[in-house]
Picture 1 (tube, rainbow, N blue to C red):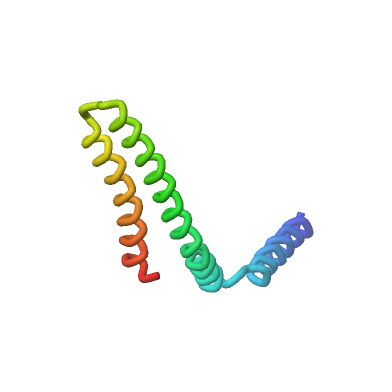
Picture 2: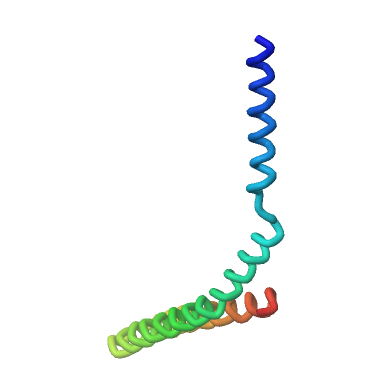
Length: 101
């Protein structure tokens, strides 16, 4: 019975020792993740600008078709589409300023 307990203690000691040896530096992992996110941010910014441009083009076509059809709510539709494009650009600019990138 004592031999089993000694063997169990030895196994636990070896397991805990191996965890200490294998364990990574947490600070290095956080800094690496920070660097990777910052490297993707410029690409994400360009993607948001591209989405804003596509939304603007779609909105321009919708407003043009409503205007040619003689609809009375053309102004409201134009304001809504223009507002969504401005919102996308403002969000990207605010995020860039907030994170200092």
